[in-house]
Amino acid sequence: MQHAGLRDGLPAPAGGENLLFLTDEQIRRGIEAMYFAYRAFTSDPDLILDEIGYGRAHHRALHFINRDPGLTVTSLLEVLGVTKQSLNRVLRALIEDGLVDSRVGRRDRRERQLRLTDKGAALERRLSEAQRARMKAAYRNAGPQAVAGFRQVLEAMMDRDTRAQFQSLLDAPTAGARG
Image (cartoon, one colour):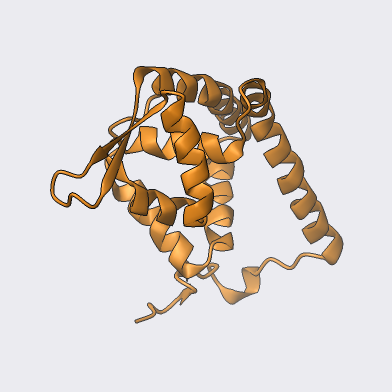
């Protein structure tokens, strides 16, 4: 059921007269800003990953396993939205290199639960430190209203299923998260 004033699950602007109309040029600039911001956001971890022969998929796996120790392979597949074959390649490398520990599930022996080893946690911390510092500096510089607006824009870009998945992630405890 859709709540009055909500469009695609997001609050409608206060008063229809305050709708934001953007030109194609402004939209293009926003898209380009996203590309350049993402490039800057990933640049520091990319240097570290390149040194050890890993890619961004390895970083994302480390991030979400760190966030939720005991995460199942099936849950990680859902969060990352990658193929089983692609994730298996990434996990195999992380396990063989001693960064991730994979154990049989306690409740369901068919499940594989994932945890970072101490070595994996240290790498995840190293990869994420610069990103956290970059986000903190940007948030501080932009101010609380801009931060709230930025998050609204990001969430508005997500389709309904992705937004629900993101919200469930926000609602979950963050046992492994730091800082």
